[in-house]
Amino acid sequence: QVQLVESGGGLVQAGGSLRLSCSASGRTFSRVGLGWFRQAPGKELEFVAAIYWNGDNTDYADFVKGRFTISRDNAKNTVYLQMNSLKPEDTAVYYCASQMSSLVHIGTIPYEYDYWGQGAQVTVSS
Image 1 (cartoon, helix red, strand yellow):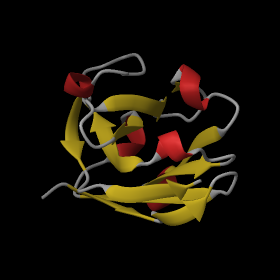
Image 2 (tube, helix red, strand yellow):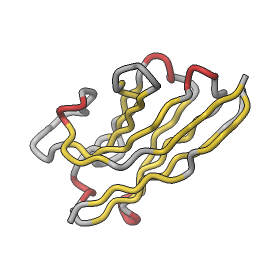
Image 3 (cartoon, one colour):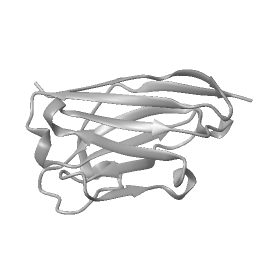
Image 4 (cartoon, helix red, strand yellow):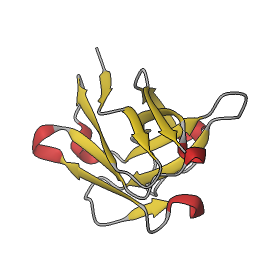
């Protein structure tokens, strides 16, 4: 059974930092891309960041470039999202997801991902 479990969410003041982790099991994740998406109340799910299976290629949404960093440790089957300079508009539920194994590029669209975690709440106060 494939499982993705996020951790590290919480409440932080604007300008602060948080690091999300996502541990994966039940599948060989070292050969698939991993990504983070988020959904704020009343808004659609949106792409945040993704990293290719080898860790060499990454992609970020414009609104997090320079503030968030995605990384992965294939030995631990874990992907991370370091979030710095957080803003109140970053408040959302953050989901990690694993990309379909057939993709040969970094996915930025939800339907390119076939397994999802349960989500971690990130709240940024002003």
